[in-house]
Amino acid sequence: MPSTPTPPEWPLAHVLVVDDEAGMRNFLEKTLASRCGEVHSAADAEAGDELIRHHRFDLLVLDITLPGKSGIAWLRELREQGYAGEVILITAFADLDTAIEALRAGASDFILKPFRVTQILNAVRRGLERAKLQRENWALRHALRQRTPEADGLVGSSIAIKGLQAALQRVAAVDSTVLLAGESGTGKELAALAIHRQSARRGGPFVPVNCATMSPAHIEQELFGHASGAAAGGGPGRDGLFVYAQGGTLFLDEIGDLPLALQATLLRVLEDRRIRPVGSEQLIPVDLRIVAATNRRLADEVAAGRFRADLYYRLQVVEINLPPLRAHKEDIPELVAHFIATLAPRLGVPPMEVSADELAYLAQYDWPGNVRELRNLIERSLILGALNVSALYQGLARMEAGARAAAPDATTAPTTLHALEKQHILAVLESVGGDKTRAAQLLGVSRRTLERRYAEWAQGAESARPARTI
Image (cartoon, rainbow, N blue to C red; front, side):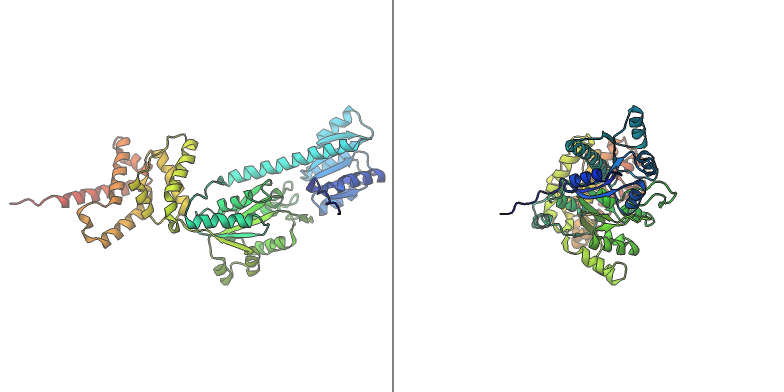
């Protein structure tokens, strides 16, 4: 029975060996080829330059003594041009001054010839681990800037949520492109995180990109990177988000806002699995999963000519629709409890009690902002110390008007919604000593709105008084 070939230790690593000794080049190529994703070699700095123009390398193994331009001089040039990869310098002739010069030029390691296989492999391992940590740290900082939520929000026991969780688990097991569709606030990024963390790529980075908030002039550079001097204002080259997501998942949120010209570029990337940085001749292989999301009907966008049909079909390998909160209101109590339990410690405030009547009120609201709106309501309420009913004022007014239309005699007594709102406003007003301006700020409404509510209460109280007899 034939043995199964051992997978490479660093399958995503691209390495360049530059040494003028053919025997050393062959030795290093043979040593690294079975352990790395791709290994190239060159005999001098000029040939190495040509390779770097067309390929991206994570690690450079460089001899100091080269014909023509020395290894240290070439390394200085590469750093000035923006090359950020790890560099291991090797030499047969070295002293302390040479080692110091090498480190100042930008080398990350230094090895004397002759060396053993274990020495060079340990140096390569250290270099690739540093490169991986740098990518992961950058991806983490990017995710924090994007305010990526924790993957704990797919909460609920309804049929809709149970079905969604099962669908996400099924698609996580394969590596196909996924399109998540749903209204804003339904948890599309949480769903993408759930796919990533249940997939074989969970050890890699999760890199979120909001296409709607990125500048159309810079989004191509952000996604694919750019060569030295190609960005506005010049400057060194840098990698794009596709490179930082290597081995993991790239989440393209609001994909419907991607400019048409860039849609064609993205389609080529999905088909070829290679990217070209702006202003560069490099073609960089990428190994990642694409999860896209939209709050629009992409089929309508295609019909209107605002979205490419071929890209839509390429993204729609698997499409999952996320239900709006109004379709699974039975999950509201569980969601409220979850948000209180997770947000209260983070805010440093005590948990909040929510009564059955208040939960019933929340179930009457339509939640146009979906789960995100509910989460924001709970966060504001925890800060205030009680359920912030007035934060849903516009929805409240609509529902009260509907309730009065359905029950003409409802004016004889305040509705449950009206009573809850009035109770909360009076409690907040009392907590600030009657300062209506401050109370309005805490309630998230204007002072004019607060005055209007007071006028309505006064008018209602006046009309409720018995008529005076003469």
